[in-house]
View 1 (cartoon, rainbow, N blue to C red):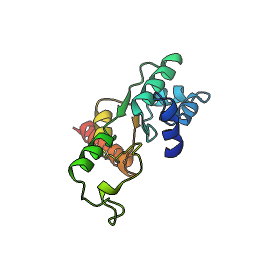
View 2: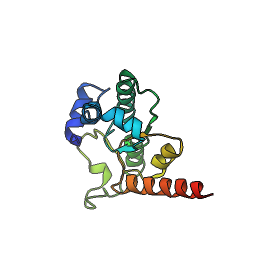
View 3: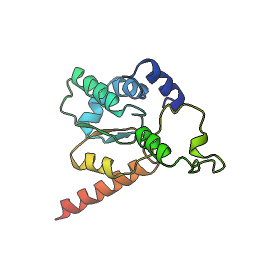
View 4: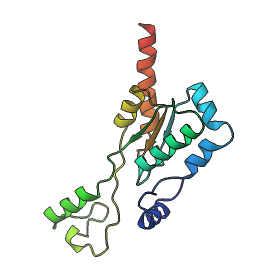
Length: 162
């Protein structure tokens, strides 16, 4: 996966960028996309970085070019908290910075380029429940993909037994 710093630099020059382009290269490799589609393989990719919608659109485009437009692709958004952080900083100027309690928010001298939180499994599970086969995420917690797949699969197994 591409580093966050290089992705941030990409976005400064090209706002439509901001995601892991290697994902597309891997999906485009030989028959990968066709095999994913044929076998019903679920992919949850934590590479949307600053622009999960952009990677979603690029993935859809790649699949359409390969005649695989039937593959359902989704993206999990809502991890960009820059506006919330700026609002919080202005309303709580005397609050400590979370990772360095000796610094208070009003003492920040550097420009804020972006702020993202790591999201859990809810959005991923909702996308799986909606039938998505490929799910692009901006930032997810390490266990979120496995937990979402486990929860989704358990429900699928239970419904097959009924």
